[in-house]
Image (tube, rainbow, N blue to C red):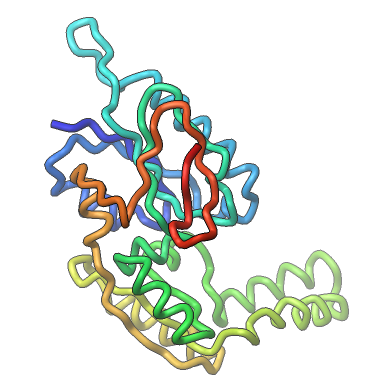
Length: 247
C-alpha cells in the first residue's frame, strides 16, 4: 500500500476527507489555513516546513523503524507562485498542474480554461470557500464596513468601501461548484444565490468532478494532470501550457 503525505488548503477539506476515506492508499493529511495565498512568501515558507517534516518519515513507528512516505502530494495550484522554489530532499513531490484550487474542484484544467476564457466575470463559490472565508455578499460588505467605521470613522469608511468595491465590477456571475456526493448542498446553494442577488450577479451552478483529486489520492499520477518532482528538484512556473515544471 502506498503511503501518501497530503499537504492541502483548508478549502478542500471536505473533498479530500471524502476521497481519502475511500482511497486504496494510506492517506495522511495536513491542512493549512485558507488565505495564505494572499501572502505567497508566507505560504511558501509554511509549505516548505510541512515538506521538511514529511521528509523525516512516516509518523508511526513500526517495530523500531521509521519508513518513508512514498510520495508527498502538494495539493495546491500555482497560487500566485506560492509553490515556486519548493523542493523535497528525500521524498518525491506530486503537484497538480493547476493555477488554483478551482481546477481541482472542476476536475480538469481544460474545463477550468474553458470556463475562465469562455465565461469571463465568474466568482467561484464552494463548500470550503464558504466555510473558510466570508464570500462577496451582504455579510462581507456589512462586516467590512463596520470594521472600517470603528477604525477610521464613517466618512473614511465610505471612501474605503467605494475603493474596495471597485474590484467587484469585473465580476458578474456567482458560480457554485457542487460535488453531488457531498451533503447539505441546499445550504451552500442558497448562500451563493443570496450573495448573487445582493450583488446583482447572475447565479449558476456547475457540477464538480472529483476525478483529478481521486486519482491523486489513489496514487494514479497522469502526466497531463500532475507533475512528479523528483527528490532535490525545484518547482518552477511554466508559461507554455504545463503551468509548472521542475529543474
